[in-house]
Length: 375
Image 1 (cartoon, rainbow, N blue to C red):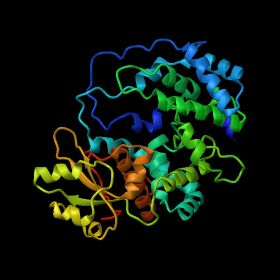
Image 2: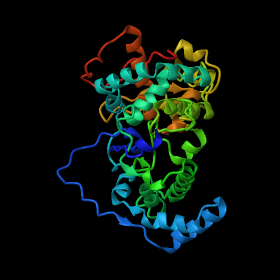
Image 3: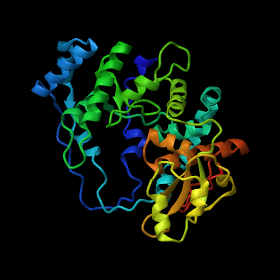
Image 4: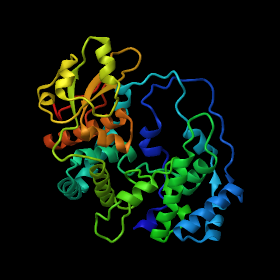
């Protein structure tokens, strides 16, 4: 199963959201610059040192490592795509949501849920993660396996390890560790590391796991003796649930609630300062002037106040996030991403409950739809 799927090809990183900041991108008449041609990393001192240290530490063959790394390509396209969005673009939750909660993805999600209903139910029972949340992640990340990445994972990680682009904070150390994890994964599976297909950041499979997450959280959930996140949607379902459980997902807890923000600007700033990390009790929120839903008032445990901007012409939306919301942001640290996951999953769940045969037409505005969980 695993071998035949390593050639899967697609175009976007993590279903696109990880690399983007929920921004409105303004049109420009200028054409994008053409990327330079890929070139081999080749023999160089930093690569030889890396290979020698890794071989000594992990028992890998140093000459084989040097050969594999020297042949890997530096990809200018990866260097371009890893760069942040240009400044000045306004974040827009409505537009971001509309990219994912839309008819084609909903139709694909309904079909995927129907096909894998038993595995989703089993994952929910074992890990306490709702099927709707798993479905939201798989839909946002890869359109249920349709868009899993068309780059060589080895080339992408070598590029970001040895020639991380200037102009943003240097994350080459992170990607070098992921390169190590990819090489260890390949050894474990008995495969050529150059055969793995990935996003431009090296994320792989239905759930777009980085190699380190694959090595730590991937499960053989279909019982065939191999944890295959590229070829087995069932393994991906179990592995996504396992990842969230290991990052603090609490069985039966709501993920978010509604609130009205206080009018006082100092109180608003205080509530927003911790960002996505749950910090305030319900009593503390109310003492600062926030108006909570009845369900939020009864919540035990800390809450985060999340702001979702609506472009430069509409007022921001505010929600409360629980520990489960924070667990979702361990998958991707964007609050926009986490709410897109939740709302896609909820929409699919609602459609299944009412037996909707086809998704509704795309909304004319980007306004957020109803959030039923935790209200």
